[in-house]
Length: 255
Length: 322
Image: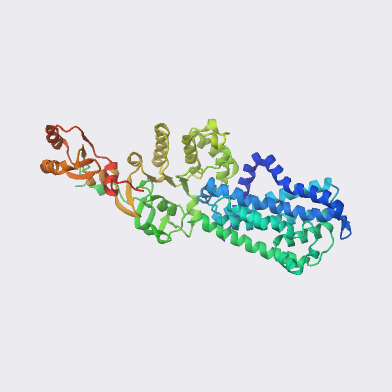
């Protein structure tokens, strides 16, 4: 892995470029998760009542925070990366400088994570307005760290998909068949304990399950079962996705 | 005869062997089963402007991409200012400026931001970068556009910005891959002037092009490539005189007349070639032949100086290359 501090330069490039698009993208990244918070949280919450002894909204928020990170990071490293790579040939110009292909991809993963983090923090602010807040300042800070970490994971996974994508349509397979279903099988909206055993086992293979598990524990400041396992699995998945994503993208960039 | 400057051999004319900036030996590039570059060797001197000419798919771009380390070599070696491509890629890239064939400016940024962000990639500190950017915008006459978005620029302006971008790191080597494609004559001449100015300051320049005029305007030496191989190398003038002669007589006429005309030209020591609707005679002096042909009263006869384009077409074939 030919990585260097120049990852940071790629990140800076994206931040400068982002200035112009900041308001429209805020609207987009807020849209879907906000819609979940309102419909599920308020609409369905009225029927759900309490989950684990707390109002349903308190159950829902940590999951939606992480989901918004997942969605933003994923879309950034699918569509935006694809445009930069294929349409604008931006990557070609970057790798003609001392910035290596690995730096470029890692820089864009960092950027995807940053975008995810922004969405997550925005959702956290919305949640505060809805009267739901983390257990302490420490848990709020920890939540932010976890959002960044989860952002890197989903950015890296998206990079793997982008490295194969012949065109935009290809991304539909990933978003419609993997990302959207994952939202419903990872315990974001309801606890998984009523699922049949095989579905519970299936859910253990989904990174979002573990991310939500950790997020919920940190948000409430109360331990949940399997917390350390979730963390370990997430770290392993993230390391693998990061390395594989960069390798595959490099194969596409350097011919 | 020491001191006699009138009778210089070709070798002396080139001057003493310059320090090599780039040495490529037995260079090949394969994409799967396809061989894009097939075992070529060349040396480029410091301060030289060296051209790669060839039709589409000849392997020019692939070759220069290997020189500036964005495409790994399949076999053979390249040395750039003593550094080996593949081992010291970052070092080579740090001293190289690339004017790419495709316009790959950063459309998310303004003109000035494009240059500022790019100078970061070369570790140029902020203050120095600002100065350099102002200087380069003046150099390519784009100061008035510094806050414009990329999609507000004409093609000529975009190409000039690419030139400025390639100069941020004060490169010892500039690679210009078809730098004037799609430009009007004014913009093309501006880019040529800038490139010549850089060459006169000692920068080594590598140019790929399909425009023969461009090669004649800029290159000290060049190679003609086709199908991944080097067909010929030399200075533009030397190639023209070796391959073609001084003049060309073009006669647009039915093929049935070829034999008669070739017999007619027998005494004039001209080579000939038929391509499509035209018979070409390559002569050291076309006057005699033209006199004879004029007596026949043929309508479409043209006598003109031989150019690099004739060399190119003779070597790579006059038929269409897809």
